[in-house]
Structure formats: C-alpha cells, structure tokens
Image 1 (cartoon, each protein chain N blue to C red):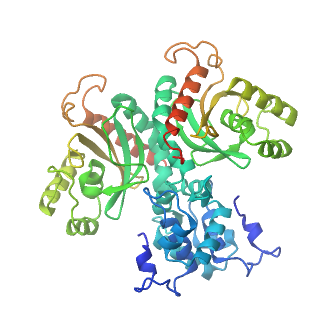
Image 2: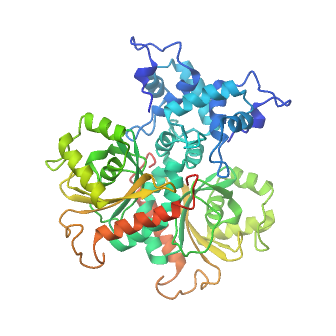
Length: 274
Length: 274
C-alpha cells in the first residue's frame, strides 16, 4: 500500500517528471520512519529524490499546515496537526478509544503488556500497547508493524482473514526470529486451523525466547474480525491457559477472551464502524 | 496553523486557480473532523470547494497511499497508513510512549482519568487519556482540542508558555462553560502566577460542574515545559490536595507532581526530543 521512492522515480534515479505533486507530498511524509524521526532538508531531498528547491517548497507548505514541525536544531519532524487528523482514523484511535477501558481492566489484572492490533497487508500494525515498567521486553511499538505469523495477534488476524489474503500470506517468505518461529506454510496452515477451532491463539517464543502471547479476535457490528487483542507474558511464567498464581486470577486465556468479547459488544453500538 | 478552506478559496467561493496542489491534498485531509469521520466524494468536493473531478483524482491518490480508506458503504475515512506516519510525531506518540508507564501507575493508584496534553496555538491537544469505565464524564478525546484556560493541563502549559504566547492568549476571547470558568484576563493572570508559584494547577469545575483536575508540568531535556499531565476527579470527591481515602493513598497533588517529574527524568535521556 505504501509507495516507495523506487516506484516513483525512473530507473536512472532521476525525478520522474510524470510523478504527481500529490505523490511528491506523500513521499515527503514517507521519508520519515521509526529509525529516522528527524530529517534535514537535504535528507528529505535525498530520500525523496527531489531537487532541493522542490523539496524546500513542499516542506514549507507541509510546515505551514502542521504536517511537519521544526525541532530546535532546525530539523524536520512529523507535526502535531498531522497527528490530530490521523487520530480520526477508525482503524487507529477510533478502535482504540472503544477498546481502551477493556485493555485497562486487562492490564490492571495482569500487569504485563496488553496489545491491540489490526492487519494491514502482510503485517500487523499495533494500535495500542499498555505495559508495566517491569514487563518482559517486546519489539513492537504503537504505530509499528510486525510480520503477522510470528505474533499472537497476527495469528488471530490471519486465521480470520479472507481466503485470498491467507493464500497470499502463505505464498510469501516467512520471516524467522527464533528456533520456535513458524517456518513453513504447512505448519502455519495447521496453526491457523487450530486458532479457528479454539477461538484464540498462543504465540510461543516466536519473536524472542522469553515472551509468549495469548490473543483473541475483536469483531465489529457485522461480526467481521477487525482487530485482535493480546497479553504478552514472560515465557517462564506459568504457561498461558494453565492456572496462574495471584494476582492474575484464574487463567490468561479466559481473561483475554472476555476482554475481546467486551470490546466486540461495544462495537455493536457502531454499525458504521467506530 | 490549520489552513481553512476559506483561506484557500477566492472570496467568491470559486476554486482559487493559484492554490497549490499540495494545499489541495492537505485540504482533503482537513475535510474530516471528529464530527465528520466518514465522507462521500461529493462531501469532500463540497467541503474543499474543489470540482468533483479534481477531488476524485486526489482522493484516488490518497487512497492508494493509505491516507484514506473506503468503508463498506464506499465512503472515505482517514486511513491506517496516515496514522502510522503520524505515530512518528514526537509531540504525539513519541511523548506518549515515554510517559505511558507513569500514566499507568497514576491510573492504577487513582482509577480516574489520567491525561497528557501539549499546547498548540491557543488550545491544548490531548495526547493520551486513560480512564476507568466509571470515572466522571469528560469532554476531551485523544487527538482533540480544548481552550487552554479551562483545563488543568492548559493552565500549566499557559503558565510556562513564552510571554508573547501568554499575552496573545490573554488578548483572545475566553470561552465560558460554567459559572466557575475563568472569565477575565485579570483573573487568568492571577491564576497563572499562582501556578508558577506552586508548580501545579487545579482547574475547579470550569468545564462541567462535576469535574476537577489537578495538573503538573512535564519538562524536556533542556528544562522547557513541553507537556502537562493531569488527573480528573469528580468534584464531590475529597478536594484535591486534601487527604483522600484509600485506594488513592495520600493526596492527589503529590502523586501528579511525582508522575510529571518521573516523565521529565525519562526525557533527560532524549536530548534531541522523544
């Protein structure tokens, strides 16, 4: 879905004269990433393959609107007004707003990581994460992406995705992080069938060898799975599904399922989406 | 900071031929608001004062990039990819990421609303809010704006704003919501001086007659106030600052101050901003 600079430039790397102004504006935004949150004008010019004068003019318009801001060293960063507009995304903060009270309750009960994610192409995108300061380390960040098959939320979202989307995923290369990562399409097929049978997913040490996640589906007003919710716990904690010592009373799976159902019930009030 | 359609159209209301394509792209995004999260193509054309064909072309580019998405009725909404890019805003999710563990601790201790906000022009913009399901009703939403002088976070942010920013605020009309709202520049001046003296703000029933907020400043690595943190409680709860019954142990003011200082300490690790 994201245009890369490659698709917008000619093979020679020269700016494509046929490239639309709209796509140039959007390519300035795409120059920023989790690893590159602050860029100089020449960084932007280089990363978008636009002449400095063109970049200067577009960046000026983006600053005056509030899509970009300058930091105190004069570098550019994503601006508050873009964040305000983006907060209206139903699959972003809209969903998050409805889910938050349930995520909070789950967090208070477990004091681990509680996560909410949606599927976008082949990745999960994290919409929310609540963490205690002493929870196990995780790689995800809010607004960040991760390969779906390696996470609890991703397994849930893939299990309930359309058949064409599943087949496209199964045909794509599967990223591997640990010896426990699901590595073959056949293994992934079996796991997805099991998720559909039980209604929840357990991702066991697939990203790091010290973390396990338990995830469940969130359904919208027309019963489609639109998001997934998970709790991530340390792998040496009692196995999810088994009885756990207090404070997390009972087991993790019923708590995750109950929270996901609670959010789904709230979404019934939004037949048009949150 | 936001361009309105008025500034981009000629006085006759006809599209301004001198209006840049970049500003047209951005005006499509500004057509959406908290009250209008889903728009048809003709809504967008009308609200941006662009011919239907121009709107159609721009909207197509925005959909293919992911700034807009279509819902199942074919209407347009803000898309997930715009939200992903906006999640990189240091004054949005960047700040929120650093603050979250402290907000969580404060929430677990108080079980009310915990809020984080920044100042933008004459408004506060809410970056985060954590609420229990039975907390007092509030009007703010994450990504939403509110007149600064009527809220605890706003009073803190105004108190530590630059002198020119303060004077501009004092010269602007002051919105009134209840009989307790600060209504005159003189009264506001006195309150801001008191905030600077004590280091925290109490906003007493200024927005609704049942809510009180206690707020404290968050400082960045160069000691500038960049955000404010607040707890909103029911006005008939024991007065903030007075001893409170359990579960919120001790008083609210020290807890809010401690959380704000905790976030400021974390921000010392980000000399370039979060």
